[in-house]
Image (cartoon, rainbow, N blue to C red; front, side):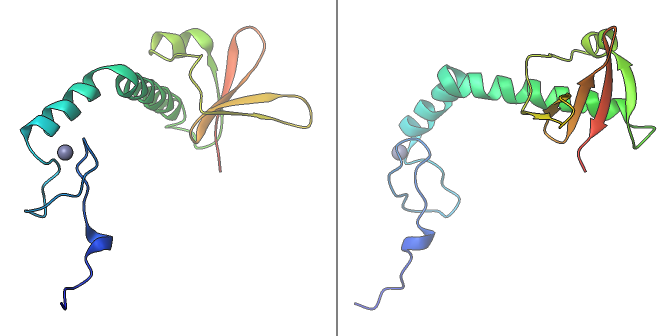
Length: 125
Ligand SMILES: [Zn+2]
């Protein structure tokens, strides 16, 4: 027995997690596993996770667009973001300054609440 050790390269079926045999680009054991996997992606927690990821990505893109012209910060009215499709309840993190101001972030872009429904859009450095 002088088999090369391929354990580290062994690929697992995305559906049942069993080791795959055969072609290197195989992702599933068979059609059954493929269908199981595709169905699980269409419903349940995977669907929820993907839809929230899409909202966060869109929120980030909207914030990014506000800063397109100025690379610094910009004051934007809440309604402008909302009309662009920004969903305020979805953020990835928040940061509180020593002065007690709270920044809300979607990845590397974020905002600070100002008075009268204005926001200061910022980018993490
Ligand atoms: Zn499988």
